[in-house]
Amino acid sequence: MDIVVSGIRSTGNLHLGNYFGALRNFIRMQDENKCFFFIADIHSLTTHPDPKSLHANVKNVLVDYLAAGIDPEKSIIYLQSDIPEIAELYLYLNMHAYLGELAKTTSFKEKARKQPDNINAGLLTYPTLMAADIIIHHADKVPVGKDQEQHLEMTRRFARRFNNFYGVEYFKEPVAYNFGQELIKIPGLDGSGKMGKSEGNAIYLSDAPEEIEKKVKRAITDSGPKEFNSPKPDYIENLFTIMKAVSEPEVVQHYEELWNKCEIRYSDMKKQLAEDIIKVTSPIRERILEIEKDDAYLHKVTTEGAEKARESASKTLKEVRQIMGFRPF
Ligand code: TRP
View 1 (cartoon, rainbow, N blue to C red):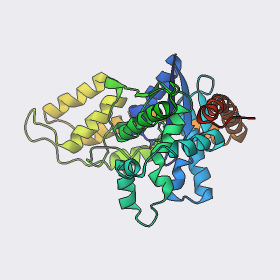
View 2: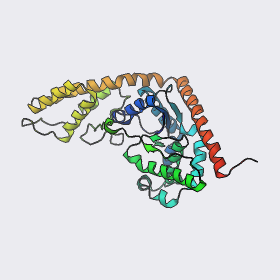
View 3: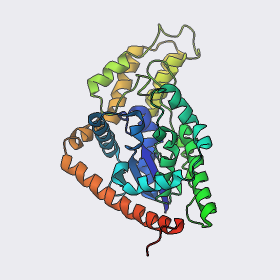
View 4: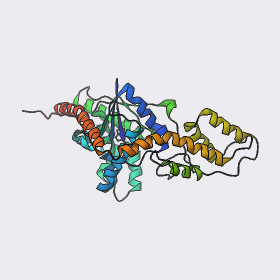
């Protein structure tokens, strides 16, 4: 059984794009691997959130993941900030992380450009903290998107460097968990390529059915095709792409045919699309509404998760301290 570690950003609720992107694969992964899922709440401090919203964000994300099917019976679910060993390993790894390599990381340069008044050391050492998250459990695999590949590459480099420096074969070099064909990219409803929070075009798993209907109704369309079998403009293609993810194949085919015959009525298609999106999201939404008021459950999940994660993490730290020369008298 492989060990998988996955960090979850504590910003923003889950939307349809997340669901058909990584999340469904996270849920499947749990059966074949030993999975550690944690909310990267320490990482979120780089942008200086106020304490109230930090807590609220962590809760939202936790609730969404649990509701969608991340299962505490199968996986270890915890908050990064509940595991002091991660911060300790981060400190040690930083002694072997160099200013030059950290400063030229793409994500650092981007964030430094976006928040020039707050280029803090946490931002610079973001990759070291992420490496600590991963190697503390000796992960074999890390499910990451394209934007995180460089961080994973640095994780491998830090692990290798530690091993070389101390002359040990201790840390593993984790590889990216590749979902291959399974990743479905969900576009926005506004004609843009990607559904996202920052794009302001997302349908959230927690959206009420009326909200979803409203959002789908607002999607950009036009006066319809003028010629048989004409190519679709991007904003129409996007509606079909979402439909392929949520609807039955016959339904998609039906609307493809109507399009090709220039008989498509967007209002019908949107009605169907909204209905099928709601079919996917409403069971999750119902669990969200249940779990979010169940503080006892959230407490239980996070304490038990932290306990199991600390078991693994404290074993690593004991060995790391020994390797580095912190030895008891
Ligand atoms: N950097 C990741 C992101 O922005 C989140 C993250 C933090 C992470 N630590 C991790 C992901 C460890 C995987 C493993 O999405």
